[in-house]
Amino acid sequence: PLDLKDAYEIITTMVDRIVLGDKELIALTVGYTEDDYLYGHMVNVCILSIDLGLGLGYNKSKLNELGLGAYLHDIGMVKVMDIAKQPRSLTEREFAEIKKHPMYGAEMLNEIKNIEEAVIFIAKQEHERINGTGYPNGLKDDQIHEYAKIVEILDVYEALVHPRAHRKAINPH
Image 1 (cartoon, rainbow, N blue to C red):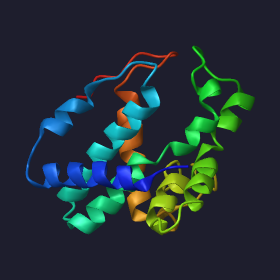
Image 2: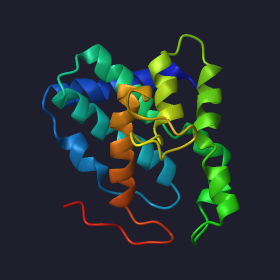
Image 3: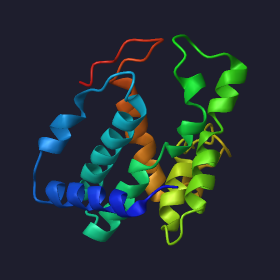
Image 4: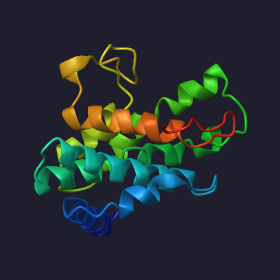
């Protein structure tokens, strides 16, 4: 079971630091090893999402909600990490299994009492695309939660600027 108390403490600390203009957290989003990929990725997406939310004028309550959802956005990957860690491009069948992780994450988060619905939407929808080409449901435009759209963008950016087993990192500039 996931203990949200610890997660909330981490997120509120990040939000407070970013709101106060502390750019150290942004500087920390540079790297991680293959072994701590999932955790590093989730933390980086969280930090970047909070910073973008602040730029969009979100208040601390919205930043905390967005931050928690961004922090937990890929929690469903724990069920498919053996496939995701393959040192090669995935087969169609393997990728189809990876594409189930948003639903796995939503299921895991639904088990937590008093979790904000927006946090679950982020996990479930962060691989949707506004043109309908995403997964798992092919949602479009306004069908996708506002926070999920933010996390979607930063999830892709964060993944591209870090190397994967099957490709090199892309220069962030």
